[in-house]
Length: 320
Figure 1 (cartoon, rainbow, N blue to C red):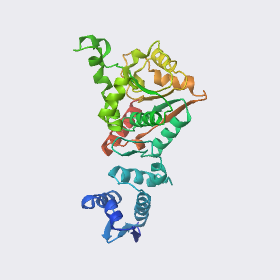
Figure 2: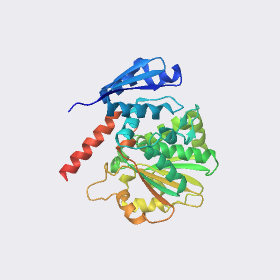
Figure 3: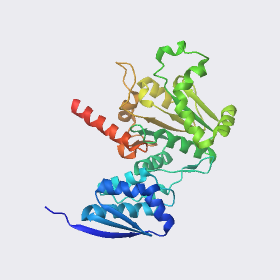
Figure 4: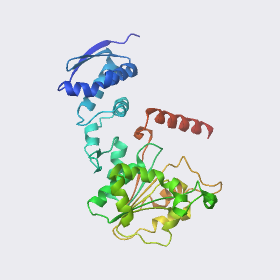
C-alpha cells in the first residue's frame, strides 16, 4: 500500500514567530521531521511540509495550535501539541495557557501547561478541599503553591501552611544531627524550592519570620485549628488513615486545603494502608471537596520521565 505524498504551506506572521517555532538551529523543525517522518522546509515566513498526507496534516495542526501562543515555546509544548493531535483532541493550547495563576517575583507568569493542569487549577478555585492525584512531574505541588501564593496576594487568606509526612525518616529522626527543624528540613526541601521560585528567597524569608508562611511536618498539625489559611499537604500517599483524618479535620473558617500525592509511590511500612487511597471512597460525594487526576500526559519534566512512568505502569499491570 502506497501512501499519498502531499505538500502544505504553513505561513507564519513574521520572522520573529518563524524563529520561535523553529527553535535554535531549527531544533523544533528537526524534531517534527523525525517524529512524523516528513520534511519541513523553512522559506522566509513559510514552512513547507511534505510527506505522507496524514502526517503532514497532523504537523499542520500542531503548528497552528502552537502559533496561537503569545509566549516562548518549549520542546514540551511540541510534545504536548503532538499528543493532542494524535489523540484527536481539539483542545487549544491558547485556551489552556490563558489562565495566569500567579506572577512570580521576577515577572514570570505561572500558567497551566496541559489541559489536566488547567482542570486542576479550576477544581482548586471551585472547592474548599481538593485532592490532586497523579505521577511525578505533573506539577501537583508547584501549581498548588502557585494557587496558595495567588490567594495570599488577593488577601483571600492570611497565611500559607505547607506540610508533608516525614515517613522516610521514620523512627530514625532522632539520630540525625541538629535540632528538630534541622532534622525535618531535608523532607520539606521540595516545598522550600517551589516557594523560592515563586516568591523569591528574600520575600519568602520575611514571610516565614512573620509567620505568614509555615512549613512543618504533618505531626505538627495535630490538635490545631487552622483558620484563614491555605494549607497544602504534600506526599499525601504516605499518610495513614488516621493522619489523613487528623489533617482534614484541622480545617478552620476561611481556609482551603490542597492534598497532593502519587498513589503509585507509597513508602509506608508494610501493613499500613495509605490514607490517600482510602479517602476517595469516603469523601467522593461530599460537596466542597474535589478530586483531580493528573496523568502521564500532564508530565512537564523531561519527555523521558513520561516514557519511564508509562513503562512502569505497563509492567505493573502485567504483574498484577
